[in-house]
Image (tube, rainbow over all chains, first blue to last red; front, side):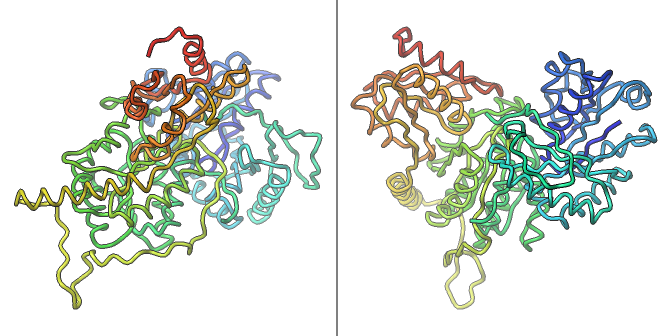
Length: 214
Length: 354
C-alpha cells in the first residue's frame, strides 16, 4: 500500500494516477480517492480513463462526487484491510486533507509506505526548513510517520531540466535533514528524457500529465 | 520581480494582496475560493497583518467598510452566493467612497448552483449588484500572472479613486496552477488618506457615512460620484486586441478567453481571418477596442460561461454596425475549443443569424 500526502498542489494526484497505471500493467491495483478538500482536478475526474487500463478507482458515490462534501468512499474498510493486490491512496492536501487519513489509520495495514510529495516551487515547501515544518504538521495530523519523499519539482509548463534538477536537489537536502529516503524524482514527459544530465543519486520517473488548465 | 513559484490562482491573489500592502483580510469560506482564505490565514500573521474569519459574508464586508474607513488596505473574497450576500455592504462602501478590493471566484448559478466555474455574475459585478447608482471597477483576469498583476493594480486604483474594485475570476482560475512572479515585498508606497477616521489629533472630524437625508444633498453626492465614474471610464479602460486586421472577432474574458484564443488559432490555421478582443476591465467596458475594428469587422462572436451577459455590452459597443453572435455554456461547463470553433465557422459560412 502506497499512501501519498503533501502540501496543497504538490502533485499527489498526478503521481497517484501515474503509479496506478504502471502497477496496473503488473496486476491488480486500486486507487483510492481520499481527497475531501479539493473541488477540482481530482482522481475521480479520471475514473473512466483509469478503468480502461484496469485500475479500480474508489471514489465517493456519483451522487456526491461533484459536491464539496467531505464524503469518504464506501467500502473503504474492505479495501484497506485487503491483502490482495496493490492499493494507492491519494490523500487531500495539507493537514486539512490529511485529517481524514488520520481518522482511518487504524484500518491501515502495518506494512505501508507513507510518501510525502514535495514540489519546492510551491510556496509552503519552497525551502528545506519549510518542507520539514510542512511534513511534521502533516505527520502530527495523521499520527503516522512519513517513510519517504517524492521529489516532484516542477513549474508547470515552464519546467526545464535546469529548474527541475535544482528543485530535486532541494528535496534531497530535505531528505538528508529528515533522515528519510527520496524514493524517486519525477519529470514531466514533455521534457525529453534523453536530454537528462542528472548527476543526482535519484531514480527519475516520467510523469504523464492528466490535468490541464483550460 | 523575484523567482518563479507555481501557484494556484486563489493563493496567488493572497500573496499579491500581501505584496500590495493589504493590511486586513476578512474571510468567510465558500468553494471554490477557500484556498485564498487558507493561504492568508497562514501568511497574514507571518507579516503581522490582520486575518479574520467573520461569522458571515455580511459581517466580512462590513469589517472591510470599517477597516477601509480607518485607512487600511482591506480585502474580502467569496464566490457567487456569498457575493450576493455582500451586496448591501458593497453599496454602502461605494456610497461612502471607501477603497477596497473584493474578489469573486464565480461558480455556477443561479441559487446554490454548483461549485464549478462560471461567468454568470457579470451583470451583478458590472451593473451595480446592490442598490443605488454606483459602479465598481471590475477586472477579468485570464492567467494566474494577470491575477497577480491586477490584484496589485486593484489596490492602487481603489485608493486613487476611493472606490471598491472587484476581481471577477471564476472557479477554474482559482484552482488552476501556473508559474508566477511576484513584485518584491517592499515595493509599495501606501498613499496618505487624510479623509480616513484615524483620530482627530489637531484636525477637524472626519465622518464616513452613506446617509444623506436631504434630497438636494444626495443629488449632489450622486453627481459627484457620476463625475468620478466618468473619469474612471476615460482613464482606466484596459483590453487586449489580437489580430486587429481580422474579418471576424471572438470576444471573451477570463478563463473563456483562453479557450477562445485556442479556437482562434485553429480557425487561423484553416485560413480564416479571425481576431480576439479580450476585455481586461469589464467596467469600464473597452468600447475603444471595438471602435478600432468596426470599419472592417464582418461579425463578432461573444463567448461566455453564462447565458449571455457581456454580450449586451458588446452590442452596445458595436451599436448595430455588425452582427453580434453569442455562444455560451452554463452550470459550470467550460466551452471547448471545438465548440467555439464550430460556432465561429457557422458564422463565417453565413449560416447563422445574430
